[in-house]
Length: 278
Ligand code: NAD
Image 1 (tube, rainbow, N blue to C red):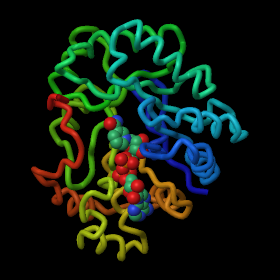
Image 2 (cartoon, rainbow, N blue to C red; image 1 turned 180 degrees about the horizontal axis):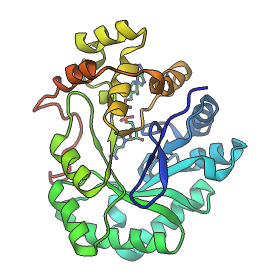
Image 3 (cartoon, helix red, strand yellow; image 1 turned 135 degrees about the horizontal axis):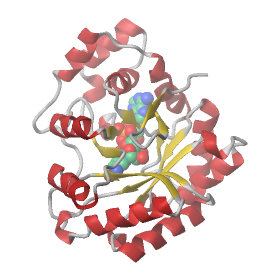
């Protein structure tokens, strides 16, 4: 069975580098597909309050028969809970829905700069960790200025930053900043969310043929080669397995460089964290 390598956070905890994401997974099937992922060998699940499927994810983890410490569970604080006491209560509610007594990782889902509460939310995550509800704390979708601001305001560096990242949108500026702070980069939408021709790109399909691999595996292997933590989503049983087996695909330096050259200035597929939401 394929297993993902672990990477180590600056706080000493570890995270399986290749996990399973459940954005847009219907709550009715969340327990089933998460159970399939765990059976396939995934040991890292990425959910969020927003996804409305924490209950199913938690059930699958609890019913997997795996010791709790062998499965890494992430969930996220939603935008309307950035006030300190709201954030504490939101984490407790997520744990309740998951049926777990701690999270491996809790993330602020979006900075929402115009709301101006991200420093307060970050202080709440620090408190949640000191209360033992959360092992590690990080952020998602922070522009660089807001990332630097929470570090300057608290002296506390997120262990990871989860951002949109794929070969058409490589986020080099943020990745360099992360490296400077010892923050791991985590890619959401690692396969481009099906919004572009990424998996049909001839550079990708050519490398896939050379390895007897699929285009999705080549894209995921590129994330892994760069030391990025990634969380592809699929509800198709064969693809759930296929995506984890990307950990067995080792690209050459030339192949990584060829995919590096696919970066595009207009490659963002999702919402820009620096934009106002209204
Ligand atoms: P993704 O890039 O993982 O794309 C998923 C889609 O790609 C699937 O729905 C399917 O259509 C296709 N796909 C999956 N495996 C495939 C394969 N082997 N071959 C061909 N096509 C395949 O996009 P995503 O789900 O948006 O991102 C992954 C995870 O990241 C999410 O599930 C979620 O956990 C997380 N996420 C976080 C944020 C955030 O704001 N922090 C935003 C989006 C997603």
